[in-house]
Length: 222
Image 1: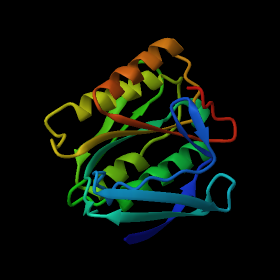
Image 2: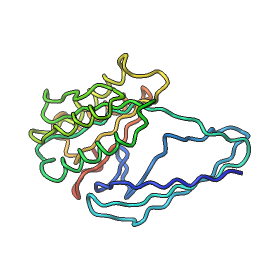
Image 3: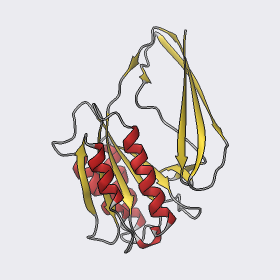
Image 4: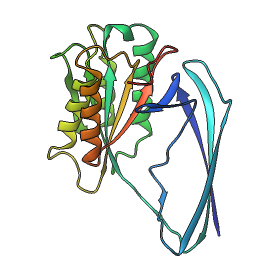
């Protein structure tokens, strides 16, 4: 029997959501995922203290994993595109929190094997790839730090920019492709059905999408 206890300090923006589902606090472990085999039985649990915090607050998330049988850890490198909403509604604390969280995230990655990149979106046609996938964390963070808020909100364009970057030759064949989108959720260009269709198409390619709602009025349904 093996026991692992992993503790994270997480900067909590307001809420963490999967597309369409909303939680107070959640955390994931990508660096040491456990093999699931007939010879390996895994039980796990997690706690967050405190359970609720204000934007910019700090919460300790503890994850307990107990494995019984023939279990071994394996590294799971990732290629992550951070997609940041820089529309006008993100002005002030929201864009500042988004940049802080994204830069902190890049700093926690193992860039000897992982890759990070950044894209951003606002009005239709104004979305851009701010930094290609790279192992240069300082360069990616500098690109994120240059973002400022203005314009409307075409979340679909941001997702599709990330989709294109994760589909090019920079993406490592052995790295899991992931999109982390940070937004207040007020998608107001293209239809909601078109946005969801794009997200579903991207997920069907095996790309994982994680969305983080920013601000007390974040729209979790988008």
